[in-house]
Amino acid sequence: MSSENLLSPAEARELFRGGRRVPTSGYSHGFAQANLLCLPRDLAFDFLLFAQRNPKSCPVLDVTEPGEVSASVFDGDLRTDLPAYRVYRDGKYVEERADVTDLWREDLVSFLIGCSFTFETPLLEAGVPVRHIEAGTNVAMYETNRACRPAGRFSGPLVVSMRPVPADRVADAVRITSRYPAVHGAPVHVGDPSALGIADLSRPDYGDPVEVREGEIPVFWACGVTPQAAVMASAPEFAIGHAPGHMAITDVRDSTYQVP
Amino acid sequence: MSSENLLSPAEARELFRGGRRVPTSGYSHGFAQANLLCLPRDLAFDFLLFAQRNPKSCPVLDVTEPGEVSASVFDGDLRTDLPAYRVYRDGKYVEERADVTDLWREDLVSFLIGCSFTFETPLLEAGVPVRHIEAGTNVAMYETNRACRPAGRFSGPLVVSMRPVPADRVADAVRITSRYPAVHGAPVHVGDPSALGIADLSRPDYGDPVEVREGEIPVFWACGVTPQAAVMASAPEFAIGHAPGHMAITDVRDSTYQVP
Image (cartoon, rainbow over all chains, first blue to last red):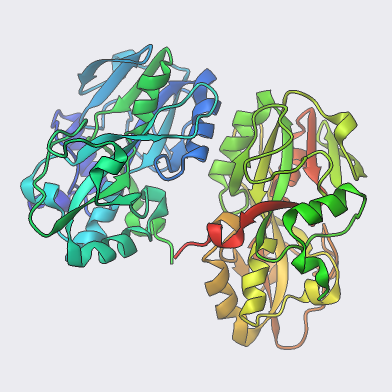
């Protein structure tokens, strides 16, 4: 592990604003990370309702006023301070870029949605290994065959992140992550990727593959890329998301989102 | 305690549909109860955002499509199956009635919001007394001097419910209710009503007063009447709510809303 984990959220955001373009897993230990989705105001109710109906994958941490570029949980600039963004037009992913200032619109409402990177600190502190941090890669993410509950103009599949966990630590991983419902909480699935419609773990839909070693079980958590899968399935005229794994580092301590 | 606690949700709703007009505390033990707020569709985003920003007082259990009269958590008729309703025009409380069928509009979106009556069963099972159930009265509710975080056209004060708890059981009451964040969770305040701006416990703003006995501490939970206080403070053109304490009995087990 390198020194990224010691950066304050403001320091990490400054690095990303300056052009560092890396996945944020392992950055700013102890602070919550967030998924981003920016949508025109006239789609905001439908999406907020979609999030309310799919709380495991879309736990809402904050919603901005239209046009605002900072948030109560994020004292930075949402247009520049994430390492990378994805832009969608009519539901098509058209480009990935480091800055979206020139695409910004005064009618954009930004949703910050909990990210499972947040509970990786407590996992590591409990001695549960997190392979993609060890390997210095992005987390592996997969679209599943499970449909989200639709709302208005939004529908789409559940997306999951996967971490391989030694069989004797699966119970600990469940116990620890279930204390953080605002950042996806307990796993949605343990083992048996085929039951989720995942044919080949070595070919994730987003992020990088990770090795699943002998004696390890693939454990699946609901993932905040689900909103972007819904954008691709539902084709709103315009949307901006974070690039998967390249998150907003918030100013909120992860312990804030812990339940008893 | 009488036999109301043994009624199924469908049986309780049938009684209320037939005209029984009583507070629902103690009804259908083991099933969650919900606050109701029905608003025109053009106010729905602002209110859903208000709820997202004030999750202790406004935990959203379900939101209907416009005009729908049942909900995924409530297999009944929202216009008739609560014991009593309150009607608001331009933010003014204009009448309380047993049925709102003739006031229904196709653009009304109904919000079902968690109710602290839900965690009274686990409190009773743990031997923590619930005075208003013993007394057969409505719970005592108070407007406080704490402002909710505004959203769009909605702002207003936090409303709390109060239960007197013996000093040696306050910790148990906190511990038990904190496991139910979807139905208001842990108390927002323990003792010292004056710090919440409550001058006289014997004069609640909603519901009935209850005796606070020697050795008991008044314990305050965020209350789902907060949305109706926001309606009165924010003056939307039309709104329907439940009459305070006269809740929607849902088909969902209270254990569904329990966190570890």
